[in-house]
Length: 229
Image 1: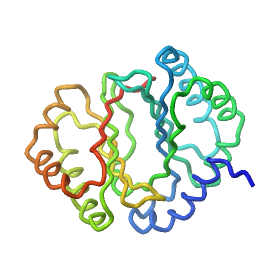
Image 2: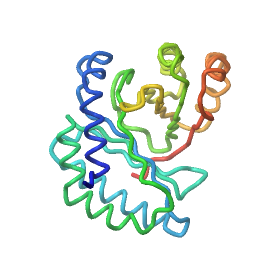
Image 3: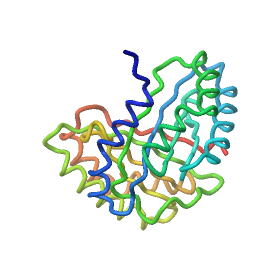
Image 4: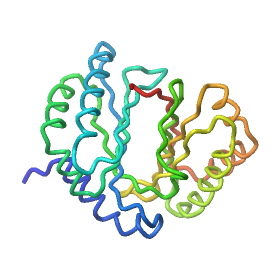
C-alpha cells in the first residue's frame, strides 16, 4: 500500500501534538520546515514557484505562516517555514491544488529529496513579527545523541533568551522535530550581517557552541537565507 509523504508528516504532527501542548501551552498549530535543493540552472524558476505557492497557501483555511527562503551562498537551495492551525489543515493543504501544482512543477527540477520535517514549537519568543527588508535568516539543524536531549533544550532556551536581547535581533525560535525528539531546528532573524556577526562572536554563543560540541550526533548545520518576498 502506498502512503504519501504528506500523510506521514501529518501523522507525526498528530503524535507530537500532546507533547507540543505540554511544552508550549496555547500553541496547538502544526509547524513544518522543508528543505529543497534544485539544479543550479533552475534557481530562478524555483524561486518563482515558491513565491506563487506561498501566495496561494496563505489564502487557505488554517494557514498561520508561510515563509519562503533562498540560501545566500548556495542559491539553488531553499526552505519553507510554515504553520497551520492543526494537522488536518496541513494535510488538506498537502492534498490541495496549490501544492499539487507546485510539486508537479518542482519535482523535475529537484536534485535531492523533498525534505519535509514536522517540528514542535518549544520556545518561539514574542511571536511571528515580519522580517525587515534586508534581514538574514539563519536556519540551524542540531542533532544530539539521545542522553543529551533535555540538556540541549535548556541550553537552547538560555541562548534564545539572551539572543533576543541583542541589538538587531528580530526573531529567535527553538523548535524540536516531532518524530525525532533529539533533532532540533533553530530559526533566527537578524536585521543585517553586522548584527549576525556580533551574535556569532558573543560570549554566550561561544559558550553554547563549546558545550554543545561533545553532545552532537552530526555536524552543526547552520544555513543563511534571505526571504524571497
